[in-house]
Image 1: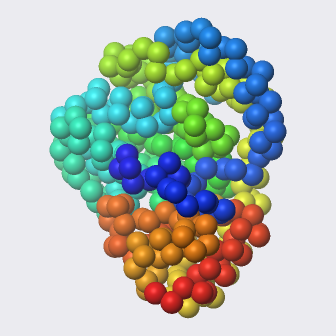
Image 2: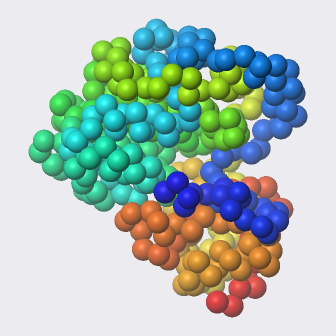
Length: 337
């Protein structure tokens, strides 16, 4: 899915006025980020640490762990591929719909893949050794409960469960399982700095797990994958960046108001979500609708047709400001198919 994701502005010639296609949080004060970039810019004149060691220490302290529990990646995606590489060829479960990079990473390393629906995950195929879940889930905003995750871990002790918490700050009902690491040796938690702090261009993420499991995985990691600027910005954000994080309850309330407005437009059916982004089912061809919105209104949506498990009648949107949300609602009203 390298060229089929949201925020693919690099492919476009039309000017984007309202970008609903990405689920990155853009509500924070950009002035602080710009100031940080200027202050730290000189670090690009030197090589970074091969393993982002100083950022690993900050991540460990943030979660009350040792650095041996942490591996840092060039965005969460590098870590998905790293896990897939470390467990190459095993039987892997990916509930769908979900982030398609899990499948791409596993396919690259010869995994035997099973794709149950979310309602079918209680019956994990015998012999499964790896499973990826996203909480809250991308693209539909589904929340995995603590009970569901606990059941997966306890019922399948020989299976590594990867919990992608890239959007955990956007969902008030979602509960992190980072504190479970001492209890479950078969748990990995991956987080993305990209989404919560609006730095997708820097590429920064990290993974937490028991040291023995981390050592097995990090053997396959290439050095110097995280650049010096990302390391310095990441350290600052974890130590001082709480004010840049979204107010999850307020964000969810805005999402519900936005979803309600869209539901009043004929031919569009917003789906329930526990976070700021959500799927919309439509009576219209999504590809043609996406082109119309971009070319006529400067609005970019996420065509969700390449998510396994979804029919090609869905698109995904994020919740933006009230003014931009109204731009989309009005544009959809004007679309005649």
